[in-house]
Each structure stands twice: as C-alpha cells, then as structure tokens.
Amino acid sequence: MDEPKPSMFKRGDRVRISTAPDITGRVMGQIMQFGPNNEDVYQIRLPRKPKPTYLIVLESQMEPIPATA
Image 1: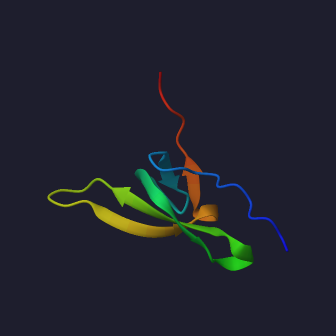
Image 2: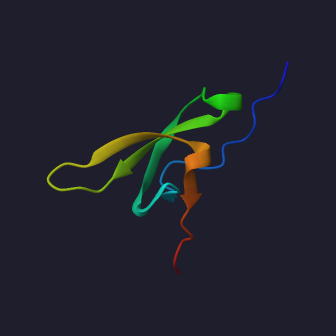
C-alpha cells in the first residue's frame, strides 16, 4: 500500500490562487486526498467584509506566499 505523501501546506500558511493571482488567503486545513492523482484538497479563507469567504482548492491551484520578515 502506498504511504500518504506529506502535505505541502499547513494551517495558517498564506497562499495565492494560481488561476487568479489577485486572490490571496490563508489555509484553514487539509480536507482530504481526493482530487486527480490523489491530490490534496484544502479549505482556504479569503478575507472579505462583512464575512470571510471560504474556498475549496486543489493543491496544484495554490502558490505559497513567502513570509515577510
């Protein structure tokens, strides 16, 4: 049986959606390994007013945003 691969993102990581570079948010958690080729599926929180928006995104559709010092 194949071992699960380690997650690329963890809770709290800042990410950018690769298909829409102006959309950024924080990873709320890994939902499951489900997508094509057992790809990880994540829930992303987008800061919007008056309520935040939540998206379900495949790992291949996200890019990490480096932390600023």
